[in-house]
Length: 284
Picture (cartoon, rainbow, N blue to C red):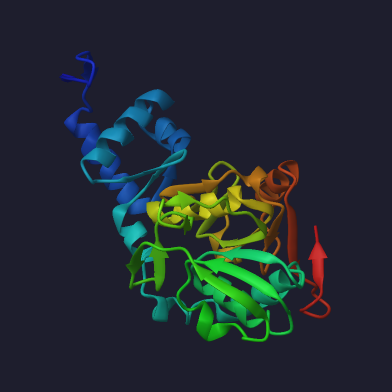
């Protein structure tokens, strides 16, 4: 029998039957990531029912709710690896992406860059640039970027996440004793994300970082998203932006057909290394 529990307004809301709750949680743990549509088909219930079920499971800590589905808590924890470990993963792809992304940054630009190992590769490939103003939450940027390239370097403040060598907090600076927030704008935001999908857009595993990344995007004239091919057709905990918010996606391989079509429809130009030289941008 289905039981009910009062919601915030006092109305009775159906509770997830214990049997389906256990089956749902076990299935998400098994596959690690799944959509609402797939769960509705598997359990022969409506998509709205699955959404309510997932909301309850998320509240119980048994799944992590995402845009359009859910992932297992263990899958989210796997993404939150220490930076020194992540620096050793997909190194060739990240260097290619960093080199390509650097070609989209003009001398004298104001650039916002988020935390991550792929954006560190970008910083290394800015060595020949000049007069850049960089604002970032990536604490490793000073060790990677040439002092000849960078005119001014600013850090957005807040708490420090030692695991990721990043600050988390508002994308803002205060002006004077009155704590008036300055209006910040940049020519380009270069944002590395953890996942790219047609339904979920660009996403990442940490809510606070997702908020910062989204705000960087909102302050930019142009948006460059960085993601290697292992990030395709995945959706993580927190959505950073819909696909249409990006001007470019810089990656190491062409996306799968369905994702490529969604990016094209959203007006996103995909840049990959040219197969003949490995360095010349190819705009799809």
